[in-house]
Image (cartoon, rainbow, N blue to C red; front, side, top):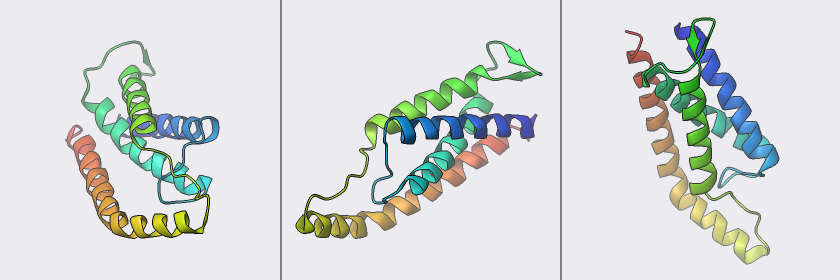
Amino acid sequence: MLVAEALLAFFIAVVLSLILVAIFGWQRPGRIGVWPSIVFLVLILFAATWAGGAWIHKAGPHWGGLYWVPFVVVGIFLALLIGTLIPPGRRPRNRREALEQVDRRRESGMMIGVLVWIVLIALFVIALVRYV
């Protein structure tokens, strides 16, 4: 069950990440390009979808003994939350804006990076504790 639920959460995370990046044009703040945005979203959505889906009461139809509705609901909720609350990074219009963005990125980049890793580790631990 652990592997099946992890694979389901990963599949949902990949699909939702591709939708956010490709269709809605969401970009990871502070990074330019599609791949950093997709990798960031997949990591966050995978960990949160897996943890949330594993702990929410099993409901809805099941496929192969796997209740997939909680995973989909958690994934969609988090994708919507990320898409609305985290403003996408945008390209600077001139040199002055580019320099201001670089300064802001230096100031906040380290703390955000540490926070993201702490949250990711906590979500994976929460998901794995469910199976112990």
